[in-house]
Structures are given as C-alpha cells and as structure tokens.
Length: 388
Image (cartoon, rainbow, N blue to C red; front, side, top):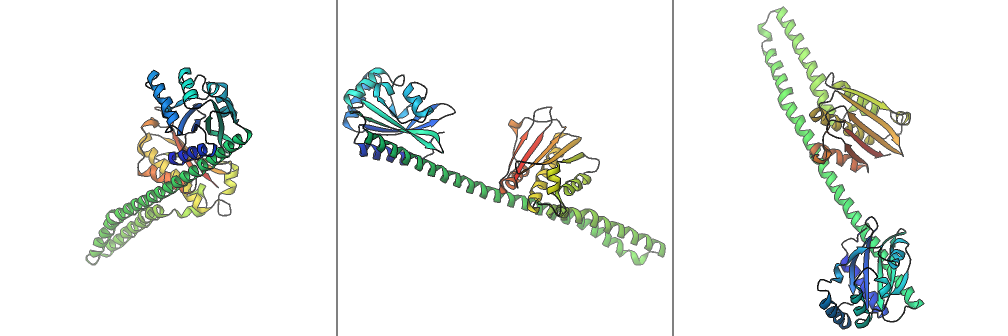
C-alpha cells in the first residue's frame, strides 16, 4: 500500500537515520503488495558532494536517470524479495542489492564516487504486513550495532506511518459523518416540504370544499341536509384515513414499534395492485424482531427507510411487477436484500440522487454498508448490512 501524504515526515526519518550512522545515503520506500511494486518516497544524502559528483558522471552516460523517480518490482533480485516478500532485515553489497534495478555502470560509479559499497534494508511493517523499507548505503560493511540502529529507525517509520494512517482514517470518518448529517438534514427538509405541499394543496382543498358545502346547509331541505352531512362525514374520513395517515407515516411509521416485518407488510399493502411485494425472513430475524425482540427501534427505522427507498426506485425506474424482500441475520448483522424482476440497468451509469444519498447517509450513520447489483435486462438487487 502506498504511503500517505507524509513526505516531510519520511524525509526527516531519512535525514535522521543518515546522521545517526553517518552513512553515504538513506532511502525510504513504500511497497504495494498488490502490484509487487516499490517506490522511493524519501532520499537523504543526494545533496552531499560525493553523491552529486557521482550523479554528474552517471548523467553523462544515462541522461534520463532520476533516482527520486524510482519505481520498480520487488521481485527483481533475491535481496529485494527477502526484504519485501519475507520481511527480513537484509545486508548485501550495493551491486547485489541493485541487480536488475539500475545499470551496472551507474551502480559502479555510485559505489566508487559516493561511497555506496554496501546496503542494508529494514522492512517497515504495520500489523505484521510489510508496507515499505528503510535502506542505508555506506562504504564499510554494516556492524551488529549498525543493524540495530537501522531496525530502530524502521520501527520509528512504522509507528509514524501507522499514526498518519489512523489520523487520515479519523479525518475521513469525520468527513463522512458530517456528510451523512448534511444529507439526512436535506432529506428531512424534503419530507417536510412534501408534507407542506400535501397539506397546502390536497388537504386544504378538501377542507375548503367541505366548508363551502356546509355553507349551503341552511338552504337545503331535510333530505338534502342528511345527504350533505353524510357526504361531508365521508370526506373528512378520507382526509383522516388518507392524508393525515400519509403525513404521519412520512414523519414516522407508527407500526415500526410493533416490528419491522409488520411495517414492511403495511408498506406493501399501501401499494395495492401497483406492485406485488413478497416479504421473507429467517428464523433468527423473526425472533429478534417485534415488540419483545432485541432489534432496536432506531435500527428497524433505518432498515425500513432502506426498503422504502429501494421500492421507490423500483416504482420509478424498474418497470417491475414483483419485489422480493429478504431479512436475515448474518454474522451479527441485519442483512436486507431487495430484488425485483424489472429491466435492470448498467450500474456504471448509476447516478446517486437525493434518495440514494439519503439511504447512504442512514446506513452509514449506524456503521452499515450497502450496494446495488444489476445488469441490463436482469434483476436489480439492493443489499444492505446493518450491525446489530
């Protein structure tokens, strides 16, 4: 894995290490195990006159030679393999360590003119994994004391790198947390706006119509008055059953207190004939769900909103007739799978709008993960995992 953006820190490591051994040069390398590639990220000693003299001669024969742009395979010779593949502290002649890495003439010039006759490399490890190395170059052979000093600087580099990565991870987590909060706020504002529009248009219009009809009450005969009261009563029941219930559900589905399965089935029932929704759950989840179960209500609500958003996307884009929802417990996580029999899409063209952004924020807020898989002409499946 490449080093994080801490070049100044690693240059200080290289400078301090060279000063401690009073050697010709020191280098710090990163190692990407996936690519089996090493890259120099710091070099101390190039500014010294012997190294500058060697570089002038090397440039005469190899004009494009650039030691600070070094990037190569860790499998080029046994020395590199021992350091990066096996995690060994290794000493060798500069010629042996540079075999297949640099031109032989360049290595010879550096050995003679810059005093780089021997080299030692100590791996930098994080949690037992080699992620780089500190290399030392000097004229005399390395003593046991030299080797211990080199190992100490490698451990220091390991600690600094680990701290830098922890700091970066913390910064990333704080950024994602702030992004999640912002997205949740945007989604809440969207819900409030939709409820406001519903109350202002549909509910207000129905109430105005009812009020207008009541205004004609005194002008009607007894039979018409009875019919009018029945009609207005019916209209008010519709407002209560449809509009008020919808607004309440948008704010918070009360049935979620009973359990996630009843809440999802209630959501499916509201779709009527628009879409067939099948809900399945394994025994572990069924036991955990419900008023007396151990699944916390806030996790039920997150899971419900994930399913709600998935169904919303299916209705808008999938041209599906069937949705299957599977709820299970896997590795101490609630696993949610929502699949459809629709037309599918190319996930490479997936655009994350407010709905999916809100879903992402909700799942992230409880430490979960989610993904969508699909292909053109095939089913689409959304999978989410929520830690319990």
